[in-house]
Length: 272
Image 1 (spheres, rainbow, N blue to C red):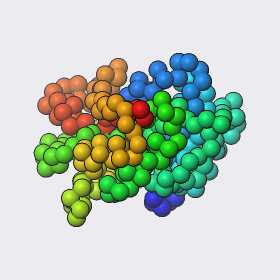
Image 2: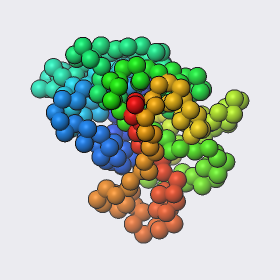
Image 3: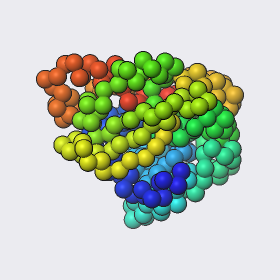
Image 4: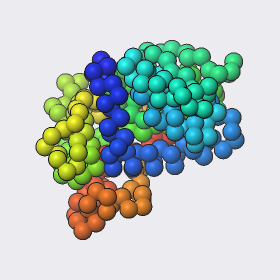
């Protein structure tokens, strides 16, 4: 993922878009209840510039260990937290989540939660996806859980692409442009286009990712050692004022299409 060494902290532009309002709302709703006991240690894969690392600490996580392939983003994460009271509870490691590896936890035990916001979508094959889940399982306690923001569960991509509404997505500040299918038949690569919704013809940044089939995610999770309950949670657009923010308050057709073909979901999987 050398593309991110070039992007670096420019990636944080996405966090300023309406797209992030929905992303953050859904991720927080899913993960914050796990922090209620006050002793939850998190390993975050594809931690980027530490945006969600910081938020998880503020939401109640005891510690966050971020694993990120891009050295530029690791530097950005360290800089983000360097002068805050959260720094002692955060650690950022240069690493590739597609390589099966045990990372050091804050205590002799493993992590309570594995978290990711856009990590699994960097697997371009079933083999890479299985390796990601093996890494997740290896680093979790037996009663640990994975919470991830990822792409919607799709097996019928022709139907998905046919129902996709780039015009509505432009209003969120992030659009996915699907490319030619993978030769393996396992899914599709796509281009992530981040843009100013008022000027969609001028992308701020672009990068590529992969959308593999739902059955591959589920099979890879089991093969990787995540044997517990697996739940796909639909994207919830119930953020106060969000429909108005993206200018769809008077466009019922576009709003319905956006809800029927959402750009993300939450995947929850227990290790045991």
